[in-house]
Image (cartoon, rainbow, N blue to C red; front, side):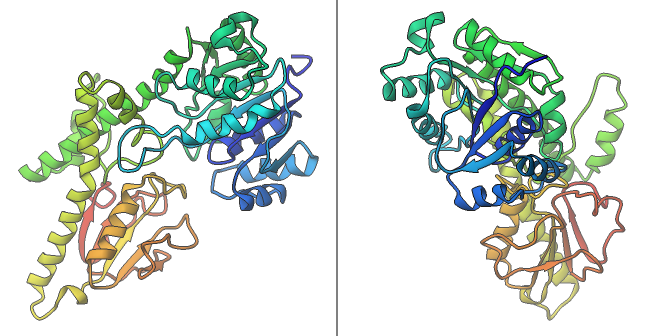
Length: 420
């Protein structure tokens, strides 16, 4: 492409997706203005620093900030394209999606929109949310024509392009993964495709509309969740029938058309643990399998805690005169998946916090990817993982530094098959 179609873009939300996306655009000589409500985040980026662990991201951010292609601010500024990458959590303790951050971002950028601008939502959305977002923009800017009412003759172009990357490989997968683009009109989709082709080498596939693109992301993560639930449920059955689940899965996967995933302590992260509920909340009578899978995966941490208490009880039986306060627990891993520092929706973190509340004895935390323990674990002790001395060892996340390590001395609760 001889000339870049967009010379100045703005990324709203500089978290796990927004910052890598901003950095990649900037690395292709596009001026990028990143916007975030957190002043500390803005300040760190403007120093060329990153506020979370993602391989290769720090190198790119440092370079593009130094060259002047990326800067951060707390207030939206005019641009040719706006990418919204803010969280979509649950509403309180409900499983319904909370679009407050998306609405806030839309209303924040609306005053600086100009004719010809493109607005893309990368945040994971329930079906219909892209059109709702376009409606919020129109409320603030009645002087502009938007595609939901003006069609192809709109002043502003709106599309949904969900992120679909794996933490720990974000910088690679943002480039090589196919992108699903759902514009409200064909022109919206074409404009969005031109933007992503700045750096994406995978196919930019245009969906028939934003609702299909929204549902595609939810479907991808729900598919994963159902398959993980099968593995987790299988681990419960094997525990009940005294069968080694890791051996069983290894044998079953020798079938050419069988690929069972590995069980664990639950399912975490901001996507797989959340997205299926968006489908369930939209169609509760039809999404019976997805609801059951979510319930299986959500219940796994409780089962792990029960196994830990059983191991403590067995240890006390073998050592008369001891009490639970004399038993040292060692927990391995807090992140929601291996080799990252991301604690969002982490079942391992939830288990560790529950054990911290329930166990009266010493609690050791081995997590090589963080520098300090999060709130709820103030009374626990951090360990670097070398020569851990404990009575009960609980493997929750199979970080690279834990894999193939020798089984420790003491009782073992291994949810990841590291020491099986």
